[in-house]
Image (cartoon, rainbow, N blue to C red):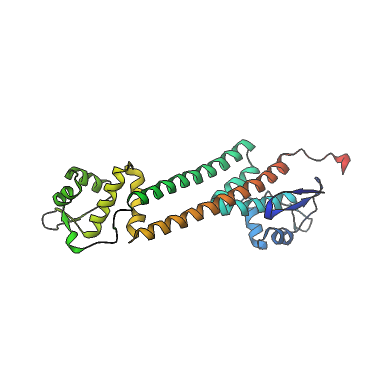
Length: 259
């Protein structure tokens, strides 16, 4: 008797002579409802099941392993991508399956790099009292440029890039920065001096804008870190489960003489 080491998803496979299973058996062992198992087959996550003469589905280990792999991968990549990856096992060469898995790892790696950059950004603005906003901080474009020591064209560029978008005088169309917009400009100025490019800042500023205190920024980044870690672990488990599916799907058929 061989045991596939899938962590929480350990299952026993007796060589290639898998026991036939009903839909309810797969559902119970994979942690799904009967309808969910049928939906997974409909969506191509499970290969088509054999049928009895009376039309009942007959599942084997490949179906159970596929359901378990999907469950693990969905926690790491989301259900849509998990369906693509596991479904590819039953339709495409192994290289294409592994390419999809590599891409999922790459996306998590990019998220982790962005998070580290955001953490560095929070450190760079640690001296900015972002919760200290006063009505008297409202400024014109020239006043804010002078306060920051930048050109007015720099502020206009930040406006065009949607980093710091000021209000406009309805009569004359002149820029006027509210206290919150002044705060945003101070943060952008600090981060630009720290070497942050426009594109990462455009993604980061909405998060910083929602936070009223630096402690809230740190808390939000810590929550994102925990989420990435959980998804990365799920992807690791999903890779192990997917390996078992690939091993069964690509192994040669049994010799009739051995049955």
